[in-house]
Length: 439
Image (cartoon, rainbow, N blue to C red; front, top):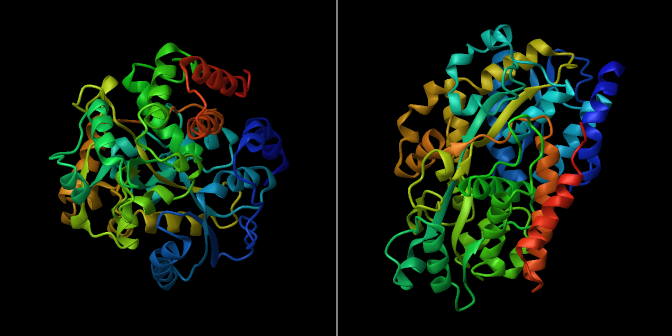
């Protein structure tokens, strides 16, 4: 990477690199962007399936197909979520990264601010078929408003409530909860005999943030002001975070051990019948890979305060998903662009999103009948009607790390029997706000 760019991004990334919960993994073993051959590309894929091996089985046949069509070999590395952000940040400053990579769509504006990613202007979108091929909800999470996107949408997801039909029937519950009050009441009926009402990933800062943004919004709060300044300690934001952690601390429908969960353990518990409900992004493929039949569970919208999901304070998910980005310093820009075109083609979108139970962000693929199942209807309706984009500010990733880690510590308090109070939640959020970069 050019030294001028490295200097420019250092200030943006340093606080996040120091605060990120995972250990930095360094550069790609394949040399990444310093690619000597136009016939090779290095691709960092995010871990979407139940394991890295599952992802390799999904992706490698498609990469082989791309090589057959273009003569370009794609060297694949599937990167765990616990390492991905730090790996990307290291690559933005060292230049030793991949040619093409997956990024969580919530990071788009932050990584855009480093200047390391290729902007998707009209010319670049033209090379892959045009910007209008993509649905608006997915494009809304590709970078800061008013700027060319830093990436293109690859997989779209939203949160849903997954519930175990047998456990619900055994407890005499006839339908999934629509409000948090109903969820708590149902959860108490279900938390017995060694089983629990709900599972969470308390040690996963990203999961914590996704739910915290929604809970705060349902209380009428945002974590940033209109001009992009942190506003973590408003009364409504504190109420939202406290309501989330109280599911364990006060309501006691989440096992204390969930405070230590960080990567798919809550999905595994749900698949094994240890918990009756799960809040997760497009979980069907993950559950199937763990042996849970689709007939064994139902899918419903995430509860809201009023029971009727919609816009405003009735949002019940962030617009989740994966975006595909290109490092500007790639030595194979033509090959990287061809790869993005291939991965976002209608045919590949159908294959990949069906494999991951996600929703294609490409209009031509989303209309395919395989994505019009009752389960997908919940996800598509949520994306269209009641989901919000992550804060599209340059400091979003720092926010995700700081506040997500603060909530991780609150889960630890709840699990340890320490009081979780309005004051303690506010203090945790105040500490997180102090970790944000000063303007």
